[in-house]
Amino acid sequence: MQAEIISIGDELLIGQVVNTNASWMAQKLNEVGVEVRQITNISDTPGEILRALAEAETRCQVILMTGGLGPTRDDITKEVLCRFFDTRLVMDQQVLEGIQSFFDRKGLSMTDLNRDQALVPESCTVVPNPLGTAPGLAFFKEDKLFVAMPGVPYEMKHIMENFVLPELQGKNAGHFILHKTILTQGIGESFLADLIEPWVQSLPPQIKLAYLPSPGIVRLRLSMRGSHKEAMQETLDHHIEALKRRIPEYFWGFDDDKLEKVVGRMLLQKSAWLATAESCTGGFIAHRITSVPGSSAYFKGSVVAYDNSIKQQLLDVPEHVLAQYGAVSAETVEHMALGVAKQLQTDYAIAVSGIAGPQGGTPEKPVGTVWIAVAGPRGVISRRFLFGDERERNILRASTAALAMLHKILKES
Image (cartoon, rainbow, N blue to C red; front, side):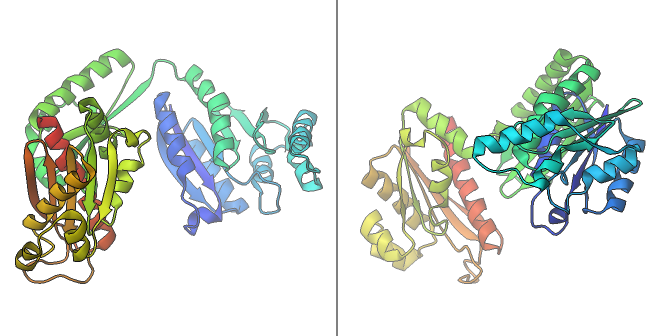
């Protein structure tokens, strides 16, 4: 079974709103074995909506729409649906009572515009929406299902979870789509592709591989379609284990895992504490670590030592080290890591110093040069990185590289 998602709204086309609805819907449809063939963003005009509907029904059995069901004059989806399905708007008393109850709960008066939201296409199946005033509208045409839903995310999700997905599960029983994403760090996409080429050649034709690079991380997504879920899962697991054995130094997680969460779990398992000393990242590593709930059980704090005087006064970096080697050097970050571990009394520490840019580079240390050190019970190690010339990207890549270095040390200790 294939689906198309039609998202209605000029705000999507001008970049004012990011279409997170469609990505969430696509993920949920895959979970019930429905393949999303196309996602279409269109403007709030009758011609565009009619054209999108007509084209979608030639491609897919499931057409899902969001947007344009509100109470204002620019919300025209219902009227266009009446034209497409050759029907008319009628007042639905049950929907009207639900809207009245919605406003009563909030202690507000219902306007005429809100009352008109109880007008629904006569030939549709009304899908209740207790979270808002616009109901979902379902149409069954031959073997196709059309569903129009509000664009408000939590209202759309309620209708998807309580009507659309159960409806599709019943119609699509025995069809499965499985995805598994392997997360790697510390190797570029092309180098990774060369390294795993023999493994890629061993994949059966029913497994599709996609490379998904992002700053500092390359994700490998395996996808498989079929009718025997357990056998499919066993096949995926077998090939994933083979991949892990081929790239043990680069593999660190699956799917939606985050490095900061993975290292947090490892620190908890070791009953160990962590601190950070940050210069060019300005506390971003600490932010990532503390974004994980429960991080107070293993993270003590951070020193943002942006100025050299702070590196000296709070982290015990000797003045002669800064004078001889500079702030962006192995010697400085190693002293920073050992200094913050001592000051905050932690088992592990991360230290970072670099030239994030866009200014400040030299021929010897160009923009993007970053030194990272990690201190632990076995001592301190440091490594030089050369990223790019974009400041925000450099900060993100430096934080990822630092967490990856910590991950490797924790795995080996």
